[in-house]
Image (cartoon, rainbow, N blue to C red; front, side, top):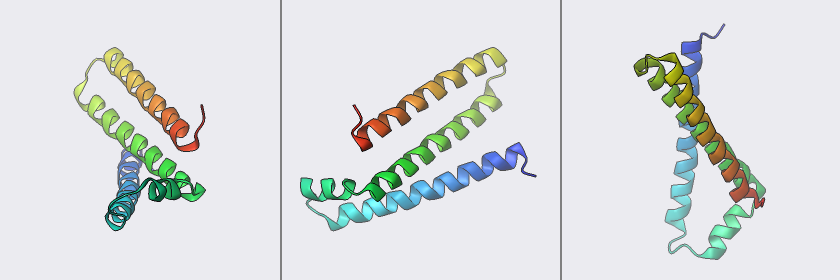
Amino acid sequence: MVTPGLRDWLIQRVTAVIVAVYAVFMAGFLLTHHPLQFADWSGLFGNPWMRLASMLALFCLYLHAWSGVRSILMDYVRSAAIRRSVEALVVLALASCAAWSVQILWGIR
């Protein structure tokens, strides 16, 4: 059985590894395509696997951010009402970023 503390720890570590792997790949791509041309960039993101990898990395980034912010709020905000309000605002902001990410990567208008 996974305890909430272990679950949060695992979420932080797994999402950090996925974002790090994506960042290393992107850094390698940028270093090997210097100067970067529009054709290189559009060719990379024209592949569905790259869009999926980018969505996975962004989803992991949002989940990582949520887990960290939630931990900080639980530790430092004593008032449950204020903590819930701030958590709701953070969830709204992260959900908006996720929707915008989908719109950008998949060209949905």
